[in-house]
Image (cartoon, rainbow, N blue to C red; front, side, top):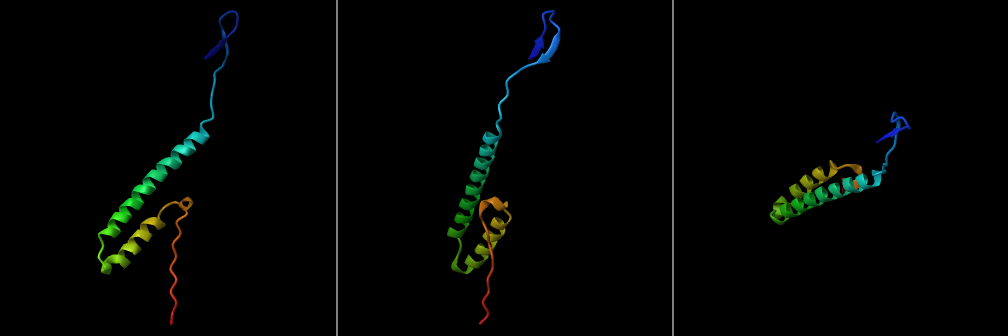
Length: 84
């Protein structure tokens, strides 16, 4: 809004503002959580329909998808092979 002097000349502006950073971060986190839960539901549904011979391929596919998620998800995958 314009700030005016006694002669009605604009000499500045004034207004009110709010820092909505925390709210925006919370909205982004919630959006990510919803999408992550949809992904997990999809993976779970896929596993329910797999035969025992398809389980290894299902695990590989699920890990590939989860491995592409941003780091803050806490999803980490590794492969360990012990030779006998």
